[in-house]
Length: 115
Image (tube, rainbow, N blue to C red):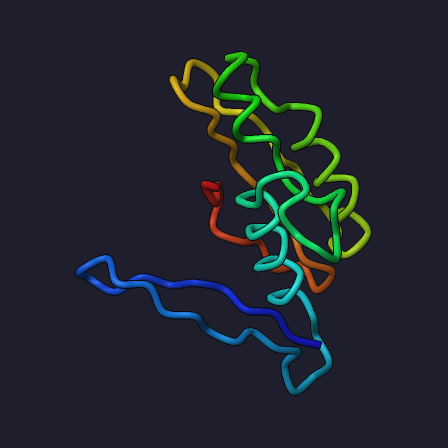
């Protein structure tokens, strides 16, 4: 299994990186990168997964945080981790969420991972 994630160099230039299942058959990195992409995706933007993403335009227009959609993404990806918590940062002027992850092998992703 694999997915693609975007990284940025020191000058802000994007590069797409392939993230694949490791040699032990562990897919944690694949699911983590996919979750980050889903949380950055606009709702309905994917032609294959129309129910993934956050309604960014509507969020900006209505000034209502997309907590429901963040919780939905958490529910979609929770089965792939021992623990997954997507939580809104309180008092943030823009919709900002932290993602706390513990993999099935007990590793904890740097806490919190801002998305």
